Length: 293
Length: 268
Image (cartoon, rainbow over all chains, first blue to last red; front, side, top):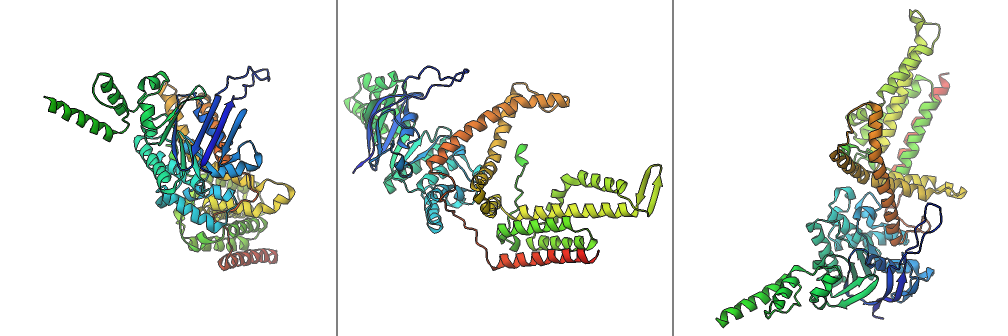
């Protein structure tokens, strides 16, 4: 079975707010309208969408924090609506949140990483092994005896990732993990995510609104008003600059540059997402121009 | 400014006392407290004092640190001393002025009380100085586990304690930020009359509480995501294991306290 996550026609609406009279108010419009998405094992998928598009709501379905109103969500073949699978699903698909401060439980780094295996009832010796391994995987082993409050944002977020890895999940869902970090912290976290995907084959679902981060994925899914509107490789998605802008999203700066050149009649493909590609394309363009003279 | 506050007052080290099983340390400290309260002869205090001094030397906790832990209670000490001096009395009058009468008994009693309180504070400070907050929480959970029989939520309480310890620095940082934000909008926090200052705290406490609730909700979700389901079936990375050293330490403390109680009874 090669599918990690299979979402079929998910519909979800948040329960109405309780008004001052103690009665529920008018029902909310659905946050997810009809989301169908399958994510393969070992892949790296980025989910994009502007605020309120439903991307975080979708992420919370993967981990059975939210259950779909209609449709089904399967994680590694297990239905999230089946309560007996709840902990198996949460162990399979770990989740990392935006604010590292609000997901670290313990006062010492290694104690925090041990939290999940402790909950799963793993033997102390095995916990030790997993904690060391997880901390090494995110490059935080030297900090194992530090207090979380002594760490930088990027380091804290890596500890949070280690805390999920210690469950030995097949998939990690990251809900805007870099939104509260400085550029250095963002880079640290992105490097860690990429390494986990390549070296350990962990399926990554990265919810983000940084286009440069999404460009590093194998696949980009764009969600708008609770529906999947685009789903392709990063170059194919980002080269549709007008459509992206219409959805209230940006594209990486290099893609925009290439697209503008393309629109102005230069022979540059808009399917450019990295600086290296852009550089090569510009070089080729300039050398052609100088040859023509 | 607020960052200087240290809670738990752990003083890391590698002495015999540091390495002792925290559960035994708690029990020994309780023994000391009970003995000090039960004893009413000078010898109990002497033996208790020798014990505390011995622990202090073994733990290599500098005396300066212990003095720091005593300083905040100096007013209480003074108050206790004066009260005892004035109101406890026997026939042996030392000094008399109008209605104030100082007696030998009162003097003895106030010295006795001061020494007793000092030993209590120093003894329990030695416990927190030599034990990390996590170990202390673990030990409390372990010691209270028999209470699970009467449905007392032991694990939940220990979890709450450790989360509280974890969030103290985070919330202090947040308080600092809110205070700066309010000051930037013209709030005056450190001047004015007492009532004004108390009122000035409201715009700090309200956002602090709101954010604490938000944090609590996010933390709860994150904990659930990491398969938290209460204390049932949970294992621990660090097992508390009692070794020979702990039993010896406990035996020594027990002998000291038994000695103190015996002396106390005999001296009557």
